Amino acid sequence: MWLLLLVVLGLILYRWYRQSLILENLTDKYVFITGCDSGFGNLLAKQLDKRGMKVLAACLTDQGAESLKKETSRRLQTIILDVTDSKSVSSAAERVAATVGSSGLWGLVNNAGYAFVLAPNEWQTKEDLVKVLNVNLIGLVDVTLHLLPLIRKAQGRIVNVSSALGRLSIVGGGYPISKYGVEAFSDSLRRELCEFGVKVSIIEPGGFQTNMMLSADPHINNLKRLWGNLPEEIKDSYGKKYYEQFGNGLKSLMGTASPRIYKVPNCMEHALTAVHPWTRYAPGWDVKLYYIPVSYLPTVLSDYLLCRSAPKPSSNERPSKA
View 1 (cartoon, rainbow, N blue to C red):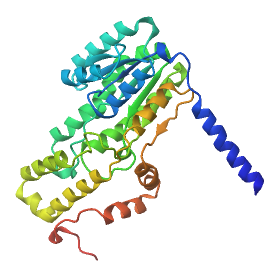
View 2 (spheres, one colour):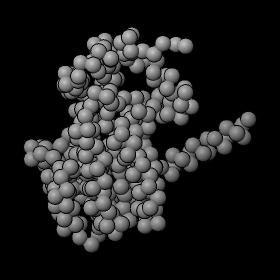
View 3 (cartoon, one colour):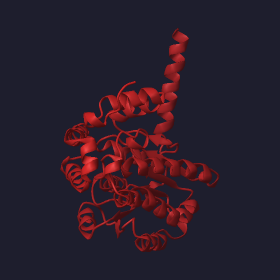
View 4 (cartoon, rainbow, N blue to C red):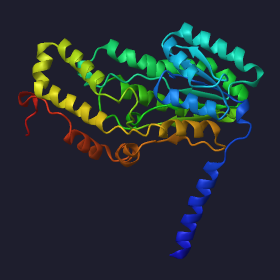
């Protein structure tokens, strides 16, 4: 018994020591981060700047860029980037290449995202799905492919932000679809680039109080828009009670968001600076204690857990038991 405990303790200490090893000469390394106007990207840019790293912070708006500049050192450079616009991505890549020169790009953090699209699948249109896929998945891929030669040159790191919903799809719409796509792209990329010395990490955050989860209002407004545009036949099938229950579910989900948002940029920083970065990071107790465990359950069990608490359609539309 004591021998087993010593072995377990030894493994824990070894794992702690291994993950605590940090690279040297970090101040010589360039890191490009998307989505730095606010949230995780904004915090990470400030965090890495304080460590003395050379940060290239991509913001969607001039206002976001100017605000970030005021809170960081002169080392940090901002770049205006719309990840859904290929010309903008190409222009940003050229700027990055001119800045990093022959040293290449050490780190790419694909953080830009859009999440105000949580709703039943049947209530949404192709345009609703494309909007979020263009930001969360296609834009992420486009940025990565443009910068990949620079990352290979530096034998650097790619950090892609997925989500707990990339492990367990608890709601419809393009958001979980996009995050499942990020997982698949990251897995294939990691295997393709391992022989080039490039490491790929995935961040799978739970609910945190960023702009996307600080208030339920944008989510409820989007739900209201979708409901208002539905044909009467579909409205009758689901029923007003379903709509109300779904909205209450969104409010409850936002209410569980953690204020400790520093946990996510801390994981990003470790993925960029550790000698042995992890393949996956799961910041948030909701991910560790619910999303990941449930995702490993047999489908019949995970479906039971999720369907039990899901909104119910109008009684006249529910199938009768044989």
